[in-house]
Image (cartoon, rainbow, N blue to C red; front, side):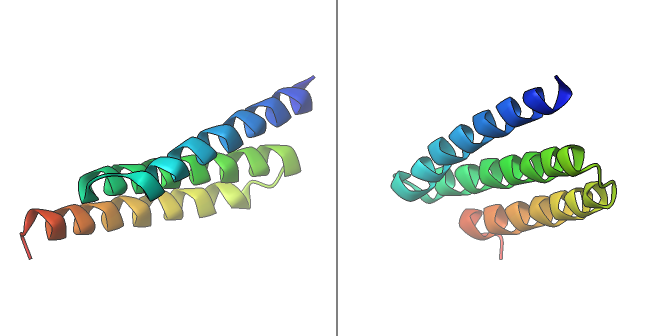
Length: 86
């Protein structure tokens, strides 16, 4: 039952990825694309965590944590660039 729920969650995450990627491509402004990129990274982190749960590998949780930190810093840098802070 637990694996079934993980697979259902993975399917929903895949659907969310498609919607966010569509917004990333079609976004009318740069700010929309930055927000969509942030959403894509959060969805990717969720996918990594679901993969760690499905494969019973705890090392992937560390990978997800490092990816989350780098993603946060990247979005901050891009937002500052768009704002004109650099």
